[in-house]
Structures are given as C-alpha cells and as structure tokens.
Length: 520
Image 1 (cartoon, rainbow, N blue to C red):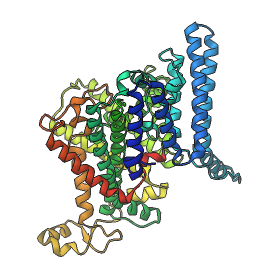
Image 2 (tube, rainbow, N blue to C red):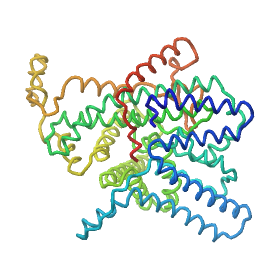
Image 3 (tube, rainbow, N blue to C red):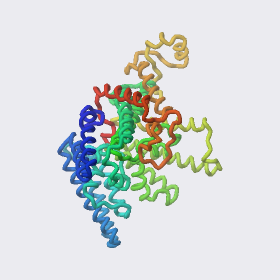
C-alpha cells in the first residue's frame, strides 16, 4: 500500500486514526497501541504477506538481544559477555541484510572474476529491510551503551513497525520515539495536530505526484537511451540528468513530508530527514540536509567507531571514504552505487582539505560574500548532479554515455523547429556553434520549462518545515528559519490553499508510482 494511493488516503489512514483515537480516548491505551501495531503490520504485509514472518522474526530476535544487553548493563557485570552478545546481534542483522540484498551481487561478481558458474535464484529484497535493520542495530548499540532500554514488547513492536516511517525512514532512535508513545496525550485527538499533519501530508503528496512524477517523464527516456548506446547531445544529457536530480529530490522530500504529516496526526513527531539539501553551499552541508537520519546513523555507528577525526587527517579521510563507500553500497547492490559513494567520499575529502587550507591562510570561516556563496552553491550542485548519474544509471556504460553527452563530446544540438521560432536569437546561437537538427529525445520547450520550474522551487521557495516552523513539525537539532511573510496558520485562506493543493494531487493519482527510496 502506497501513501499516494486511494486505498491509503481514503480507507486505511482514516480508519486507523478513527479506531486508534476511539479506543485510546476511552483509556484503553494498550489496546490502542496494539491496534496501531496490527495496522502497521497490515500496512507492511499489503505488498507481500510472506514477509510478515521476516519482520516479526527480526523484532523478536532484536528485542530479546536488547533486553539481555540492558539487563547485563543494569547489573554492571560480564562486560565481555555483553560485547559478545552485541557482536552476535549485529552480525545476525547484517547477515540477514547481506543475504537478501547482496547475495546475487556477490555471486555474479565471483562468477565474473573466477569464471565459475554458481547460480542463485533471484532473491527479492523485502520491503523496508534496510531501514528496520539499521534501526534495530542502532537500538542494540544504544542498549549496549546503557543509553536506552525497553521491557515493553508492545512498545518495541510499535517502535519498529510504526507505519509512517516503516518503509523508507526516517531511521529513528528508540529514545526519540518511546517517550512519545508513553504520553497519555497522544491517545486523544488533537485538532491542531490533525490540521498540521494533514497540511504536511498533502504538501508531500503534491511534491510526489505532481512535481516528482511530472519531471520523471523527462529523465526516464534519456537514461534508457543511454543504456541502449544512443549518443546523447549536450542539452539532452543535461536535461535527463537534471530531470532525475529533481525527480529524486521531490520524490524523497514528498515521502519525508508525508511520513512526518501522518505521524503528526497521531500526535507523534518524527526526526526531520530532509531539509532543502540543494541549497547547500558545500558537500558537508549537503549531507547534513539530505537523508539526515541515514547520515546520522553512518556517522554515529560507522564513521566514529572507525576513528572519526581522532587519529589524524589522513586516517580521517580514509574513514570518510570507507563510510561513503558503504553508504553507497547500502543504497543498492551494484558498482554504480559504489561509484556514487566513492564520488561523495572524494567530494567530502576535497571539502575538508579546502576548509583546512582556508584556515591555514587565516580566512574567517564565518564570513562569506554573496557571490562566493552563489559560486559554492552552483559548484556543489553540479557535483551532486554528476554523482546522481551513477546513482540512476543501470550500468557504468549508461552512466559514461550520459556524462559524455553532458561534457559536450557529442555536440550541442537543439531541435530544428526551434530555429524559425527563435528568430535572430537562433541565428546568434548558430554562430556560437549550436546546431539545429532533429533530436532523438524530441527535446522541446516543455522539458526546459518543467526543469526550470522545479529548479526554482528547490532553490528559492521555502520548504515545508519553514512554512510550519511555528508548530515544530519534526524533531531537528538545528535551526529552522521560517519565512516571516509566508507562515502556515489555521486560517480560511490557508485552508482553501491546501484544499486546492490536495485536490490537484489527488486528481493526479491516476499515474500511481512507487517512491524511489522503496528500492533501497
């Protein structure tokens, strides 16, 4: 069941809310929690009921390991035993993830390297496996450190299965969610929470079905052509790469908003997972704003345990590269994802070296000029677009074909029919070396208009968190600067505006598509 489906919007969500508050308002809190767990499991099992046994088995195993770790920590005994239990707990989780996500990838590469002919049947990746596995690994590590404990099995089940964040994040911490589930106030319908939640949900739905899916039609044919060996021209290649860049942006932003909005309807605040990352002026800032909870997980449970920046600059750069390579591999079992991670590791190293150089030269790191920030924004964005090519391409060949086109190797062409429409401007462009000829992708003005529109929204419009900053819609440790003259409030004009947004979004549900991060 998808957030962007009639079944979810008009049946599952309202029924789940109604029953939850009806039971909770009568004081039957455990039954209300049990209902929410059951609804979440139904939501998960909608795709493939067979995988219910997988998530339930994972929950039972990790709950038992977590309780054992908490008991040992409370007794302050058997430190070696706690390490062994933690190691085995993490190992089982990683082996489960490795089998479903990487077994075929490993066998295929082994066959290519050794000339062997091992064969595995195609293994389908269970939905949300990466997310609930990482979430529970974080819980085990926190239990080992004595930072959290859970002895209520029902609450633990809700922590793992809570359907707004189950499928594609955010990756939440036990200590963030359980105190909220324990509050009596969440069992009573709060009209402000409902209004804020619905607003965020429909803004996210609009981003997904209108903006992301709308621009996707320009990305798909370009990448498909690249895989078939079509020589893409400069404008075609850039149009495809930019279209995918904004498709992924609004797809993930839309999902993140919808998850936060649904949770808020229940009176629960999820961690912020997406905060205008394309406005970042360097790659370090980008990773503080893109998939925030995954970045936090990789930092806290991989980069810092590797040594972080505590063992010298060279070791720091090695740790950054390892972290990003594994982060790339987490997104998908393919060398293109590894390359994407390697590029971002390289970007981060360059960014840190540049900052160190500026400090050595005595530059004030807190001062900047508008033109310097603008140039940094553009350079960072272009680097991100190049990396997304590998992220989206099905093969290295396809990615290289796109990048060759983007570099201008295959020429600068525009549609022949544009020459007469552009008049003197067309003649001037010809003098600059741009050729007007028939194009394979039927590159037209609608491509340009659509890409420029979503680009403008991503760079110059406030994000959802800024629009609703007064109501603190999500958990976020940083500062969110709301727009003074564009703040949501429960007023008639905002009600009508969101109603229009919701209507347009719902009317576009005829072309339902999965969220891109469901694949990871």
